[in-house]
Length: 390
Image (tube, rainbow, N blue to C red; front, side):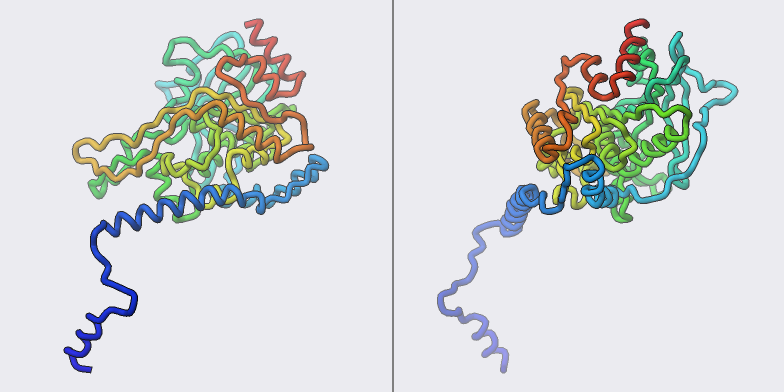
């Protein structure tokens, strides 16, 4: 076929067709179509979620066995798969100029500590050690933009009396922050505005790991240590904001956690795509929403307090010499009704297992109500009595 015949064939129209008129931005239409498809599939995934679950609520033992595969899959997508480093004691962080002891009152002392987690990775934070009998053991996770010292009350000049006087041994770990001060490479002369959490996320997800998973490992290393202490005591993992997210996940993946307190994080998760990318977990919504995560905690007690949500409007601004490459994403306070609806869904999914293992508390709810829900009656009464006597 010569060139003229070929061109004539190309120019000819097939019956019932006409050339595509470039009257629209086809790239924009493609992106909009992909957006509609993904939003539709996100909602469809929630509707199909129950096909992954075979809950047996005839007994606690049967229930635990029936969700074991779901729990294992959750550990996998979070990257909580590496063997943790064994240790028998926490390490005090001190030198000749700065002792580990940074505060104390008549009921407790506060020390700076660190502990091994994985090879080449340590956790660090504050230890609140009661001077009397230890009534409970707690990991209390701050929000990502809150230091352990701020959570304890150093910023305001008065230590939190509930933390200092309740008789609980409390560990407050440092979390990876949302700042961007160390995001980049000094050797390559590159700085970017990605939050530290995103900086770790970007490098770890391709290896099957996650910043969330690494911080859960910090928590579970402490749960390992709690298990080696004399006199079994109730173990609670609590968290505020990003720490609340971690507490929810930690309680879901490890049954040694006796109760979970989530403050400032619990709602339907179908809008996850709008949140910061460091909260993205591949395959999560196919099998897990917050209600499903809660059912992995059941029948252990879960307290959700609808208060203290972090307000994140986007990544840090890119200053001079900083590349603006961070992913968009925001965190805002969801309606109280959405948290209640999600908890109601969790309770319905575990109908017949236990009465009111999960509760949503409002901002105004008292410490006595929450402590009473989280801990066994004897421990809760003793903790409240110590707080009242202080």
